[in-house]
Length: 196
Image (cartoon, rainbow, N blue to C red; front, side, top):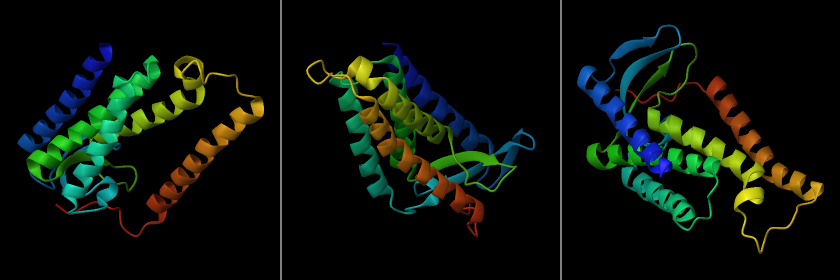
């Protein structure tokens, strides 16, 4: 049941930080957090990552619910049982739930982390949980799922060639997407920050 506590901490921590930001900062106002690295800047984001899909709150809520339901299914049906897989699932669920609460209760997501050393869209704690959860989920699937959680009837050792092929099928496209995203962030004409 430790993973239920992790889920509660993720949701509670995210909502507590958003409450503090909305209680102490006006929209667009900043406060120092780690000078030269990151400051807190209150922003209302009606879209998804980097303010994409702005104004599509209903669509984003529906997509989030479907994705979260898929993660819940994997946990409830005990398809994912290894601690790393469960940790990844709880981080994704906690982050998704944190932003979902904002979308349903406020009509927008409260973002606050504003990097000072580079131009990067403002993000929140829930976003951090989702990103870390997805990365841990990829590590779990690539290196732990076959050994610990794959059903016994399907569990047969992979050849080295099969293992490398699986890793390439997942890791290479992920690396390409990360590279494209990084290039977009570096060379995009605007930071992608929604105006207050």
